[in-house]
Image (tube, rainbow, N blue to C red; front, side):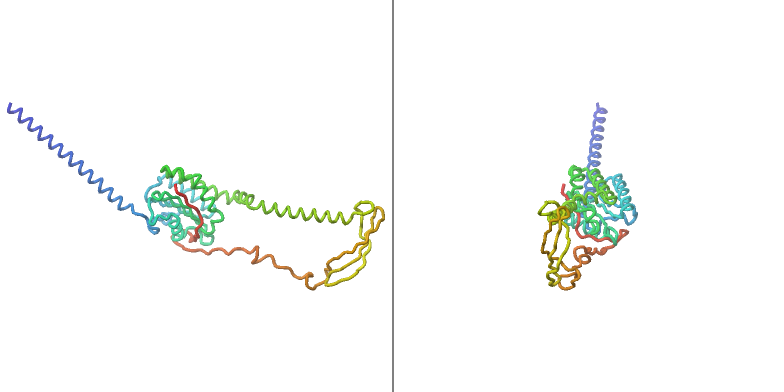
Length: 330
């Protein structure tokens, strides 16, 4: 009986010890988790522009800065490959940045300053492109260099975001949205280089003016033709067979010749006398064959001066930015 009580007491002590150790381990694990979360929160501060890691400085074939690991390694590798080939084919330099939070929360200004400070794009052509994804702000922002604004206009940037990126991003699928957007940008720029987009732009932008010019020219020729037909019509036989036979000068003032002209119908012989005025091309006075206005040069067809290269930095080319591009919230 005494041995049985001692065994029960021993079991009770062992059970209490086990419970105590289990609670200690649980408490320690919770402490470790809390510390880890605290450290991660301390690290996950809003990025400043100059705090974005520039992987392109270490490896010129890399274009994606992904410090918060928002994009998978497979996605960043694929995007790097696409953008490297794009630069080789077109010379366009691209910087892609994906972060959780930025200082100030202004995606456009942040992307613009990134492009300027890093000198994205060639200095001679300013053909840089910055694509910024900020998950906390729920924004995707494109910013183009001065030289890329005509090639990749704001409307196209917006269309790519709406059509390919915003829906996956709204569901937290960062990889799908970014890959779809980068592929769309790449296709557009390659097609533009090959002439596809230029042809579409020409058809859209220049057909109305060409149609107007063609219509004016057609009306002019129709009017001139009808005038000539009326002038050659014989009042007697109604056939268009009148031809100029003789003329007599009546007066000439300031290069304006006034003549009496006789027309004879070659079909019926009927004659018509008309008084006509014409410009004397030999006259060099005011209103004559003096030099006309200069059309070409610095007027209507004068070229617009290009923007010089701006901020340089790193291994990018030193391109400059002015505010082209577009942004979306998702």
